[in-house]
Image (cartoon, protein in one colour):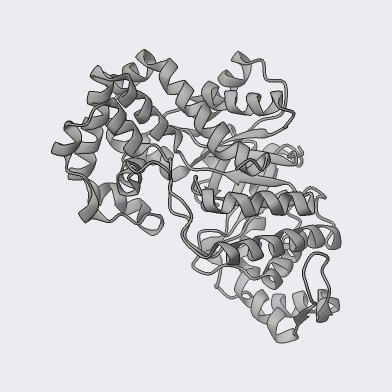
Length: 417
Ligand SMILES: [Zn+2]
């Protein structure tokens, strides 16, 4: 199974917006741009909501068949390891092997020595097309990299072989992710990590590094954009070089675990993809659920009432809701509007505070981040919430499609700003 050049990871907390999400991909295709949709959902999300990987599969299949979509699509077991892969095996055909927890655990000395021996020819001055100036690589550096990453990649190998034994080689797409770590990987580290992935026999098609800066959920990038741009370009260059050198799939590409809505780096990403004629997998978070809330608010009446109620409950349960996401949110609690104030907001006031439109002065990044992690509150409303989604399906779908197409696909894959 080969992943196409451009692919887009979409999350959907409640599994009701698959058709509206796919509509954005179809709109891109109508404009001559082929993007493969990949529905992704992590174990954490499933656990909090009480859904299963089979639900995501059903949603994807249903959306695809309703739209008579004939191109490829995938269901991604996002951030899995040996301890939780089994529930995903049947329903997924894309697996993101998360090795972050094993980075820094030292590998056997004999493995490290064998790795250095095997990749000795890269020690010294190494020119990589697309990177200015040669990389200077020392044996100590390779040793340190092997010490830090080799065990993690061997762990990924175990998970890969576990899935392969169940599904058969070639029947799924493999990604290796290292984004949930503290430090970004350097280009030299990336080179040898990809070498280790190849040595381990993992036919990775995407690799998700950690980039510098903060990738908070559902809000814009926080960090040095110029630094990110340079890092991203170097990573793209290394991935292309390493794929050839180590005989990995020619379409090996970067996967950016964006956490959604990193508008300020979409420009540099688009420029680099164009410059290198490179592919990309862009993974977004479950911000589709925020479009549900926006749609409900815009609908007014009982829709707006539900949106206000979710906010009020999320303020009263803020510690509990934020805890699983502590590392990827930055909420200035003192600046959150009070539930009493929000209860006086009309349709437009609520929607514009939540909608991620940076040029709108009513946009509120604190409220947006809190609501992003508050999906548990809606899950607990159960049928009441789902009935409202059904009742206001049209207005919600419009928001979902427009968000993916206008705010993400256009700036990244079409370079429209
Ligand atoms: Zn990630």
